[in-house]
Length: 636
Image (cartoon, rainbow, N blue to C red; front, side, top):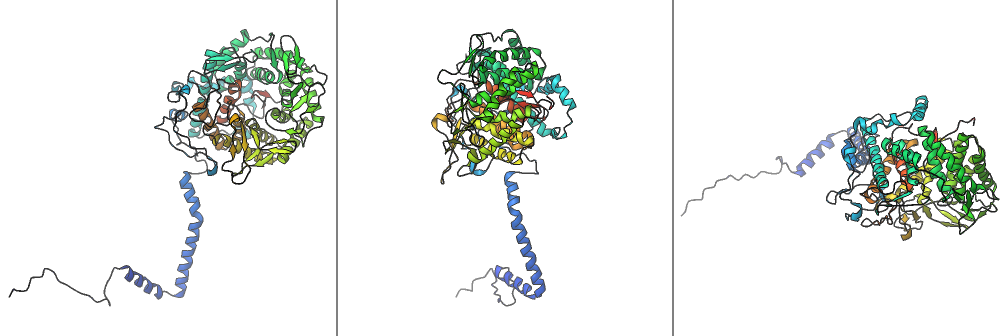
């Protein structure tokens, strides 16, 4: 018989009663006994405290998570789509399109439903040299030799006015070093963009009207060096001394208006006459005033009509004028958007004929029938002085700057011409009543068109002048709801860029108003071109100048970067494009309009500047080509 096997362990069994256990059940029973031992009052106080903590937690949780999600720290936190960078070279580098391997998805500013379409990683045509078209970084860190000197260079006229300016509401300048560094890097980015555009013009189109940057050639409209004259005051404001000096030399030696050539009254007034007058005021150089007198007198034959409504075309060599070959009409915008320039020419020369001619036009338009709640038709007959094509109303092409110049003439004249103000205020109410609608699904406020009682949700990019004009009027004491409408409309104009694949606006947008629409903006194939227009940047400038809301600068920065990505030509210049919805092939049009240098880049620079005295809006009023003219003392 084998002995019992040896056991290497001891078995011990404990009863449940009175034994220790670390089980969840035992802990629950223990806690329950302790809870039952408390008095009713103690239990009530504990329950009340727990409920109070729960309510407070629910109330504060969305705010905390929102801050954590957005990365907001304090009221002035940077809310850009890229990391905040103080280093000038890094900030400047963000202009460049990233290489496909570097490109990152980012959150575009604005409500989630209004975000930009995700951009593919497909490269655009090698024509633009996206991979290699870097900015000239050797110009970034100029120290005391570069852009830092521009304020002291801008001329005695501006410096004298700055010294006497005691308006405290316009003297607050952001002192934060990081903000100033960011602002300066963006200003330098605009200067660099101008230098690049000027390089193309100088190399391939010097002295001609327009650059064709892709074919490295030029186009003529009037044969008067249109781009050069349009850019004069921009160079002065940007502090580009070398470029300005060579342009001035061309004006002095080469510019002649004694040519047998037809020019458009409106375009030559706002670009050439306005540009020369503005440059004269900024520099004090009499050369530009003499040239302004010359072109101004040569444009006067346009007013030799039976109705006193000017012809659209003038031969500045022969001294004759005529309407277009296909009609006897002029557009309302053309004949009512030359007043600022001719009025100023009369003030400078002491000859009232210029002012009398253009104010006669305003008097006639003021009393004409055919308006609807202050809105004017698009055409006016030069024979009888009456509106034609009645029943069609728009704030886009052929009518836009009529409304702009109503307000700006009132401002220019020292706020004394009541008829102009009345017509402007009535027109704004007419826009609200007849042309204002909201889109689906996001509720964007937009300005449509009216044709014989039928509303069309069509909005030209040109209409994006309106937010800036409304904001300017509010700055001069007009109703506060003008500013609120301006803020709504500038959001819409920004979304016309943000919702396009290239981040650049089409020439014309149609807004959806039907339930179930998948997106707010629809663009017809024929309307998908971008001409490097300034109107949205112009309004961003006004809104930032008056509100100091940094989002307007950020929106402008996005637009400038997209101009660099899709319109910049490596050999010099920028080109308009045919398709803002095609990342792979935006299809260059091979044309750089003079207003890209005269307006678009100028407004970018003013938008990014933190100096409210740089072309103070209490001292200057911009013509519709962005040429600043002085506001008259009220005694004049």
